[in-house]
Length: 253
Length: 214
Image (cartoon, rainbow over the protein chains, first blue to last red):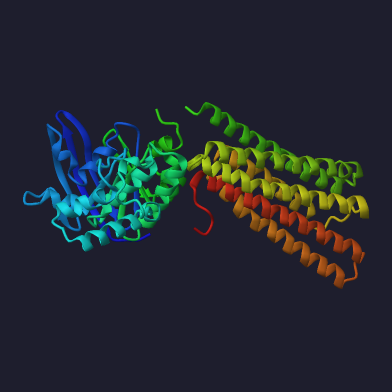
């Protein structure tokens, strides 16, 4: 499954005050693949995900060393435009967080903040984003409806569409299906599988079966350490580290 | 942690061991029947063969239930999938033993000669079946590999049998029907050895996660 690296993490350390949350993490995340980050609560996987688009910058007392290179450029370099990082590396959260406005305005929000005002161009972006998020057919006649009036699963796909509207390379997903029913979860998993044709997906999940089903690559974190990184198939069929084996088989602790 | 699951996996291993024991008994029955001209032992085979088939179904059900309810991964998945594959080979061992027993019952065929290495072949096959099951139970890769290698010895015995039978036919030394039946019996033993070799391969896979040729 050879593919080029889009995110190259080297000796990444992160402290929240005195707490050493990520310890010497080094990994190469492949482009146009789904990489799942797994591990028990508090292992650092969400912290790691958030470092990929500098979401931890906002946390008081955080200290980060090492590097995260996106297409060869260190995103923590002093002259880097954080907004630009987050445009290229979008994020979808655990719970849908749409704005209390129409579907159209939600999806057009990002492009507008990046200076796109042309109505035709915005129409085109909204349609493309909703199509990429596999929800166009369900909402195309209701673009002016309030986005908060849709089901949880639809709202989460609208969030994905909103993320795609600024044409990122990478979509980070932080337990984005954990609050959804199996049908909505299935739709988002199918969507992720389609998204990787155009985008790189990096997801935190507590759902082992989801990681088995859709991850091309999988990283197991424990107490801030990256214990094992390999293809999803290898991690779930023949993990090399006994700690990974204990975790994925449910015999951890 | 997952105590019920661990108990079910333990049950699976025990059932595979029991099925293996039935297969060993089947080989003993036909070997002793052939070599000791003991018809009674061949007559015990149909019932044992049926028990082996029932055990296969039982183990398949356990595996399918585990796959459905526990969604095993890593070494658990390898154990369940290896068991599921192994029982097919074990069932074939039972079937082929019964095929030999049927020859004994129907044709009243017993081994009477001394110059064909049937006894050694039967002993080698029995050893392979036992050790392949031991390798699975004890997660012993070296033992599994030695079983796989030992298959060559059984193949060589079979080649010897063929050669000796051809010589006897040429020399018009023996009853032709007897020789052909003997060849068939030896072929069944050779096939049982192949199945034992497959069992050993799955035993190895259960530990390493690597299949032959990967």
